[in-house]
Length: 195
Image 1 (cartoon, rainbow, N blue to C red):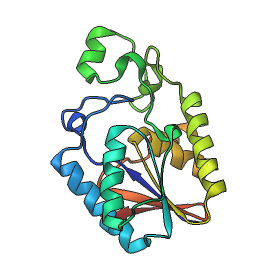
Image 2: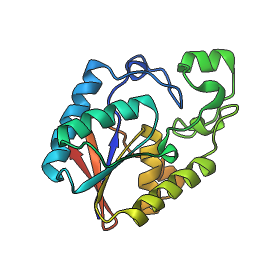
Image 3: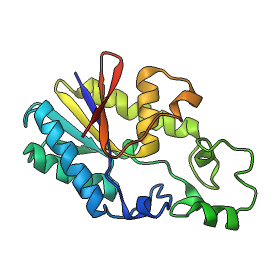
Image 4: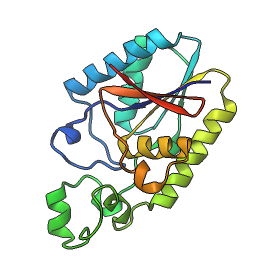
């Protein structure tokens, strides 16, 4: 079984460097183009009946999912999985770096730029998010005879690849999160596929 791991296309919040967490903003025109390119590449690697799509239920992932499914020619075989949602950043969902530092002065001081997400008031911890992503990955692996296409988010993608490859936390949090490429996971290997 192969897993193709896709991050959603660029959103309006991505374009203005606003952290989304579990709130949403729609794909930009560039984001729709990125999703279409990934869909065409996935169509060349899988067939209509050869893959099942698992997507975060958040709007930006669903929008990416619909575009990719259209490019592949799929009309069924899609499961929305809440375990694939982006990190819940609590009070910091939807804020910019400036807004976080202005409204919560000093709260990110001393935290690594890849670690601070997990310290938001009312947000998810690394351990809690890792547990839910690992459960989703295990469920996908257990129920799939076909290949799986997973459409999720930046931090979710990092953690899923970290779980898949048994990477330590610091290495997991530094994994790249492109919106113009996806990852092919098979036999313990992770390979970037550019679109």
